[in-house]
Length: 348
Ligand SMILES: Cc1ncc(C[n+]2csc(CCOP(=O)(O)OP(=O)(O)O)c2C)c(N)n1
Image (cartoon, rainbow, N blue to C red; front, side, top):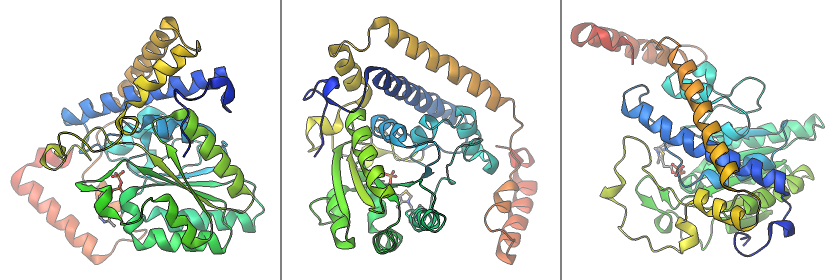
């Protein structure tokens, strides 16, 4: 497994000083985004929010390893990746508020965030196969959680990727929890990475709280994928917060996790300490990153709040390309419910 922080000088890694500062800047931005988005949800501005606190280092490291033209197939959890790929923070917030059209930001190759677990994976492999047919040299990163590895879609996608040499990196962010189900109850395999072997390609583990190691590992995996060799990367990290704002992890999470310290370490604090030791960042730079992140989020929230609230009926427009009778029934039910109970609730 690839672990760098504290074990290697930055000069020995594939990340130069300027690139390390860029990584740090985006990890700070991701943390600021996550905290501000949580507060917005708490004051009722959006219906729900899935925090990614603890996973910023993994997501930013992976996003920086991608080429601009590569495609990301994200989930609800991977907003830090989208942010680091250049999706405006206001778009991510508006998407979470219920505007489907803000799903990926202009000119960024991101597929829509998947909420049905693992459903993005066959799509991602299909996109990779299409790249092969078109002689397109780009690759795909298919993001998933540890829970997704129990879905049939995961195994079908892995099988197709192996058979058709699809240029796909499966980035499994193992944050140790799938809502209340711990990793050891998810699979009896020793690792998630080893599942790749059954499909004829490589699986690797990486310290997901080390953005440098993730950058190197995902970068190497993307290079292999472009040669027709898919890779499964298991990024070992930890979900510090709740599954979503509807969840209470105190109901199921032990007070003390039986995990090594590096696994639950805060990626932001750890990276900052490392970069200070390496002489790559100082007080001035760290303060500047924080101030810039705050200003960026101030502006993003102002822009997002200036958009009128979505209408409750929008929910029904994006389920299928064409309406089904059942969706029509559900819309009629909601309309009559809101008229009877609370007409004001037509807006969030
Ligand atoms: C097909 C499907 N089954 C069940 C759910 C309910 N559900 C939402 S999130 C989740 C757990 C996912 O865990 P994991 O894949 O580890 O991702 P994480 O939330 O940790 O990022 C489940 C079971 C769903 N969204 N889709």
